[in-house]
Picture 1 (cartoon, rainbow, N blue to C red):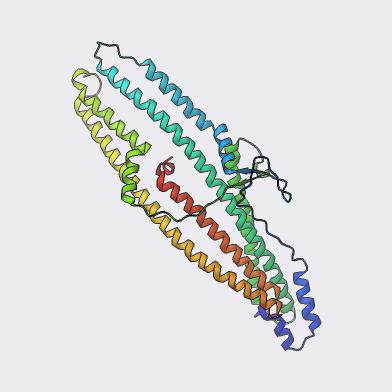
Picture 2 (tube, rainbow, N blue to C red):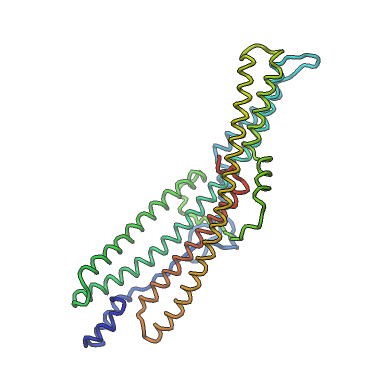
Length: 377
């Protein structure tokens, strides 16, 4: 009812002056210009925009800094150095046959190669964490911009409702309900601020710098539909190359070697215990393969679901953009008030933010489909 307040006022015979006063009060401060920083192709280190004094970093630059400052990477590098030293120190003299030394040498070889793989996947995991954090911050920026627009519109509508309530044109019940909705928007704003602060904490730790909020960290998202693939073939390829599966397979080999050399190395565990160790290692390997296959199928299905949702939201966005064009024409013709247009504009921005969030999630799920070990780090 309140959306057609002007016509109600006319209907009861109030002057046009009161109508003009009502709309003027509600739109005198209509100056919001939401700034959304998501994608720029001409970003270089240290670049500053005319309208923004913040220094701009691309996601690639942030990842480089994060890797350079990461204590986890430094630790994995030391693990590799140690594994290499131990492997070199473990020597088998020609002409000698010491089963325990043969096992130790094999274990050292596996540990050295695993240290190399672990270092590589740790770097990829850090990159994944940084990119996800950047994307999360950018989505929160979009949501905060949308929230600001909705708060501005809600405040104006609340002022109009109060004027109409005071004139007896609106019920106290409707006014109180709308006031509660406005307060909920304010609470959502505070929650978004907290979420933003927590997201920056992750990047601050990765950066090794303080006050990372002083920088604009940007990541370009290129949304492309997943190419038609045979998921079974993809799973087989991943089983053959996955670093975690590789490690479990090597563990089985090591346990089997202990059984083969038992006759010449009866110290330590009994033959039966060593056979049990082999069986247990094989079970762990089979379970890991099952889990990997399951996670890849889930990721694949999730990607397809996201693509369907993306298509649906694009259609909704197109309809809403058409509604916005119609609303602007109606506003120019004096058929609706400016608030009606502003509310549709906020709806367009909200849908665009939802689409961008879907695209970011799509990119992440595609990455996990091809590199499922990132979810296991």
